[in-house]
Amino acid sequence: MTAVQKVAIIGSGVAGLAAGIQLAKAGVEVHLYESRADIGALGSGISLQGNALRVFDALGVWEDVQKAGFTFEGLNLRAPGPGAPIVAALPDVKTGGPDYPAAMGMPRPELTRILFEHAQRAGVQPHFGAKVTGLEQSDDSVELLVDGESAGSFDLVIGADGLNSTVRSLMGIETKPEPNGMGIWRTFVSRPAEVERSELYYGGPVYIAGYTPTGENSMYAFLVEKAQDRTGLDDAEASRIMLEESRAYDGPWNSIRADLEKGAHANYTWFTKHLVPAPWNRGRVVIIGDAAHSCPPTIAQGAAQGLEDAYVLTELLVQRDAVDETLWDLFHARRIPRATAVVEASSQLAQWQIDGNRDADAGGLIFGIAHQMAQPA
Ligand SMILES: Cc1cc2nc3c(=O)[nH]c(=O)nc-3n(C[C@H](O)[C@H](O)[C@H](O)COP(=O)(O)OP(=O)(O)OC[C@H]3O[C@@H](n4cnc5c(N)ncnc54)[C@H](O)[C@@H]3O)c2cc1C
Image (cartoon, rainbow, N blue to C red; front, side, top):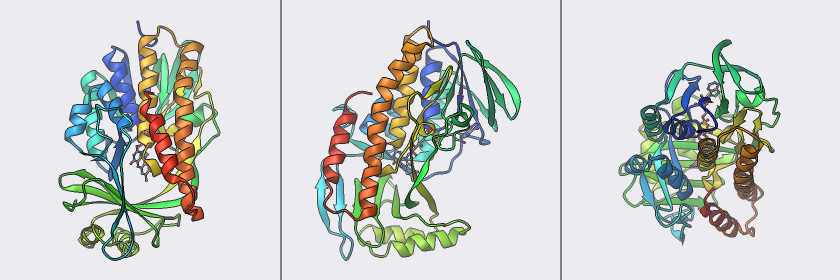
């Protein structure tokens, strides 16, 4: 007997889909509400560390994910300027354990597609164009309002509705994402054969320039700059700014610039940071993923943490027979210290960049967190 029989999940990002897969596989009736009209095919690439891959395996999606991305080990640091020399080749910690690659890159739409297909196969019932607007809670159920109308009663509501979570507001939680002072340009381009792992360039006109392979023929590239108001730019202006800002970086950046010249789309967004203090639930409503925490992606752990939230929560819901304080205590004990460590380390690394602190032990911090993530969630 599971702790819940009928659950509403709000949001079809990685956290919501992962939660849906595990619950539906256990025979729970799962309704997934997503405000967008469909699952969405937009987005650049994403880096996934071993601990995220371990969750994919536990959910039964790893084989498909692996086929759709580019796995690799290690990280190269390159210098700005002519020839872009490799100044360090760093080994990776296998955060998922020895059975998984240290990391992989993949196109975000592919990841969403694979998770959605598995969710549907497991029996998750999707509702698109369905914006959650209200919650009314009694002792043993939650009534959900979608576009102002009742969508029925549920044993549990999981808010996986991202950074600007409506569920979080409806729970009365005031913590919100705050900009950390950095903005990022991202573009999805072709992969030069020499790019076989993530490479980062520190120094030069932006804080960080880099790229990650996502497939045989694809990779995403990014420039992290001081946050600026970039609203109102058309596609051509956006590509032009990214191209101009990248001129200090040689090597594979020449190929990235060639794609930008040909019209590769450049997307801009600000980094944020927030961490909702315990508890992440109010009665039978709980938030997971970016709804509960966000951080600059300096160690590429955001989605991994959302996946772990989803996995741990649904494992407890499947193994236990009641939604009670013990369940919430176990959930918070397994998730909040870990998510806190990631938010703090990611934010610290970003702050060292902003402050121009060259003496800080960035390598030590990254390795420390990686070793922590190597322990199962
Ligand atoms: C620039 C950048 C780069 C990043 N790179 C990485 C990386 O390389 N690796 C990594 O692990 N992480 C990375 N992250 C973090 C990662 O992208 C996020 O942590 C992750 O995508 C969050 O997933 P989620 O499921 O919690 O939320 P989301 O993916 O945001 O999904 C939330 C969903 O809820 C829906 N929704 C919102 N409100 C409502 C409502 N009221 N009703 C119904 N539906 C609603 C939204 O439409 C959306 O589909 C990066 C983040 C940024 C900003």
